[in-house]
Length: 260
Image (cartoon, rainbow, N blue to C red):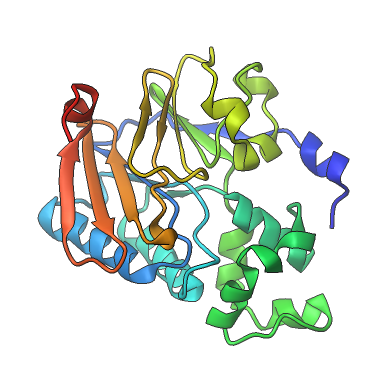
């Protein structure tokens, strides 16, 4: 595992996506809840004509706490074939897992106590013994997926990260650890990076709107609330309740104007 100081000092790599897509769908924290993910993907593909011309951005925390981390990762790997522009960001739970496995990341010492047991259970693995043996029991394609996750992407007037940014720093000065772990320091303050930050990590009852500074899209799916997807070009909001069948559609404009 990395030392705390070294892990916190790593510079964030924020990739700029110059190509404009028809639509840009940002997905909130999934946390091993495969059924809801699959239902909303089918809705977007079958009812909203989503496809290869659209950009999908997954905000991180695909694993832990929920029952089906393995299925979620398998589905996301397949999704990349259906929607080649898809981007996968690294959440703090992936960060912890990678550190626990000895392949980068931070805070691996608290991983099992923070939902990691559920991750390994979905693979039929008891996380004991040499790390090399534990890693060997994970599918190679899943390890490749986890180690290739990005810190953040900038697309037009939007910046997509898992947790937020340090509001006192320019984008070029941001640290990777901040993008995956920050909470109040970011949420409670305005920033001057010139983009609307779309983030997850901190669960809200509903979409958190603090325009033009930030949009919070973690709506606590694994805690019994809902999964939220925000489409930032046309301003659509797609949500499904935990254990639900129906996808509810609303608009960011209505929410900003005071509607539901």
